Length: 105
Image (cartoon, rainbow, N blue to C red; front, side):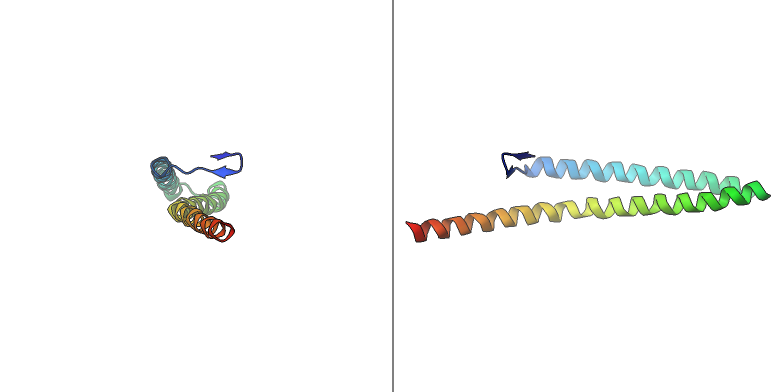
């Protein structure tokens, strides 16, 4: 949360939010796989022009959905590293401020 230009990160809340996002992503991926299995089952028995046209559009949608899940996975996986970067930057800022205070007396 940003308040007056200050970034506050509660480690427990960050970890809980990251875990929640990972769980939601797992659910989304499972639902995408279930839809894929259902449609693939349908397409094994459906033939003709309409089936071919549907398959073409399905493949586009399926690839896009898989890409979204993959991109979201990368974002969720990056959250712990982002938190570590913020903590590291905050520590460095504190050291820099202490060094400056020492020089200025």
